[in-house]
Image (cartoon, helix red, strand yellow):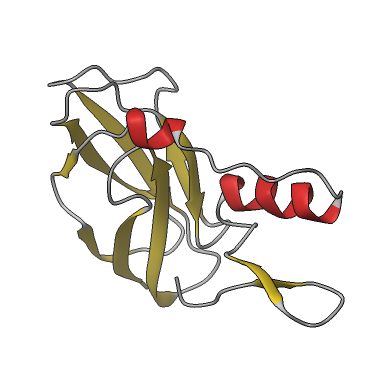
Length: 149
């Protein structure tokens, strides 16, 4: 992540690090700390961790007329022995849309993330899609680039 967020206590000591905007687990942690709730380590995620293979981490959409929406598909394959659960997907810009099934992905199966990009004006772009899931190396960073003319 390019930018991190720090949650400080009343003595200006760091109590938590992470971006609550891009990670729903960090958001829940921050809310618990702020509300004075007991914070308990969530080890159940370790027990349900799986492995994921990404068909490609980056896609160049080429040169295209900026008024026309461009689409691509990223395929995530569950190569672990536990179901893959996508908890959240965040795009770096409102011009990027992501569609996917919310159902858990069994071992050996894959899920398609359908990514769309609609430019607001002519520009070169470099956008990221962050996938939060129960994979060992979550979050997974995907990227689309191109030149909307």
